[in-house]
Image (cartoon, rainbow, N blue to C red):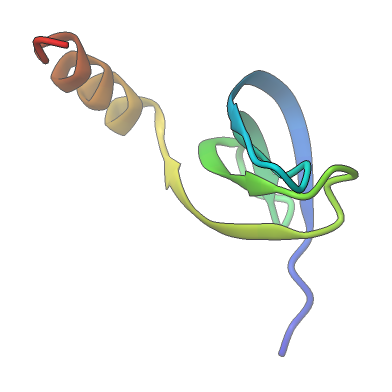
Length: 73
């Protein structure tokens, strides 16, 4: 399996933290030296391991923001 390279360009924020120290974070990440995208996933405390996540470009993030703002929470 090929190694996945990533660089966290900006940490937007932490959504939650689990009992074992893993955090669910929204970050701006460059995957394999490509243009950065917004990324929501679980990370181990030192960012050496990650869980499955969702990666969104600017337009997808704007659409998600619109959908979330329409929720009646």
